[in-house]
Image (cartoon, rainbow, N blue to C red):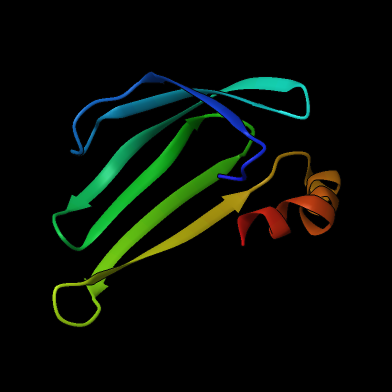
Length: 102
């Protein structure tokens, strides 16, 4: 999450399939609620989280865990998302959002 975001955790639970997570996020003076559900958990391999309430038409985070040398692991985040509002959303993605996702 970019450092200029303010985040308040509203709800969480165990790291298991079906758990709902909720935050209140603020940035640039704009506050919104964001919620997601843990969809898939493969211990020590993969966690997949899907947005249920938020600014995106679709937002999926896949976190994969792989060995990375002796006694180390590598956590890799992959975010798939789609903005609302058709062409205007695609323009906003090109101008602002993509660089935030890197």
